[in-house]
Image (cartoon, rainbow, N blue to C red; front, side, top):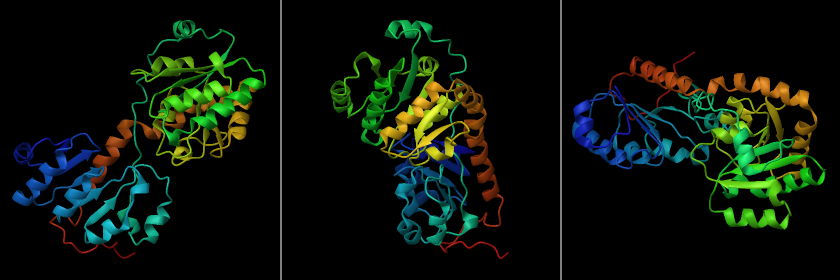
Length: 337
C-alpha cells in the first residue's frame, strides 16, 4: 500500500502501509502524523518519499528505510545526509538541473541515486477545440501569429526580458500579437514596463486562468524567458499540444527543450537572442512545422503514467532488496563490482 497525503495518525496506523508517499504541501499534517506513527509503532520498513520541507521532520524521527525526493535541487544539503546517519538509501531528484556528479562528489554512492522525472497529463488539452472564438474575443487580427507564454508574474520568470524581446519583434514590423497568461507579485511592474515600452494592445495580459487549454490552442509559438527554473511544466504542456518553443537555458528547461529538435534555446537575460529566436520561428514556416511535429513525441518521457510507474518500480525494488529488514543508521555503501 502506498499512501499519498496522510491526514491523521489513526488513519496511518489503521492502514499499516509498507510505503508512505507524501507529495509536496498536499497536507501540512502529514509530517506530524508520520512522526507520531513512527515513534509509537515503529513498523518494520516504512518507506517515505518525502517531497518538500516537511520531510526533515520525518527524516530526523525515524531510522526506517527511506527515499528522499527533493523536487528542487537548489535545496540539496549534504549536511542533512550526514547528520541523518546516511540512512537515506536513494535520493531522487525529479529533474536534474544540477549535474548528478555534484551529488557524487559529495559522497553519495552512485547506486543510491536514481532520477525519476516529473510528470504531467499529456492528454489533458488534447480535446480542447480550436480557439477562433477566443481570438475574436481578444480582438487579435486573423492574420497575426500569436506568441504566448504561461508564467507567473514572478521575478524568476523574467518578464522584462520577454517584453524587451517583444518590443524588438514588433519594431521589426511583424504581424504578431503577444499574449501572457499568469498573475503574481510582479504584475504592477510588468504592466508598467509594457506601457513604457509602448507595446499597447500588441501585448495582452489575460491574468490567471483556471483552464489554459484554450490559450495554448490560440498560440502559434510558445515562449519562456525564465532566468531560473525548476522544470518548466508549462513547456511540457505547450509541447504536448504541438507548439514550437523559444526558451532560455535556465534550470531544467534544457531537459525538456532540445535546441533545434523541438524548440530553440537562448541564453538567459538576453532579450536580443530571445527576439532573434522568435523572429526565426516567425519567418521560417517550415521550421515551425518541423519543431511542431517533434514536440509531442519529445515529451512522452514526462507523462504522469511514466512517473508513477517509475516510483512504484523503485519502491518494489527497495522492498525486495537485501535491505528489506530495518536498516541501520550506518551509511549505505554500494556493493563491490
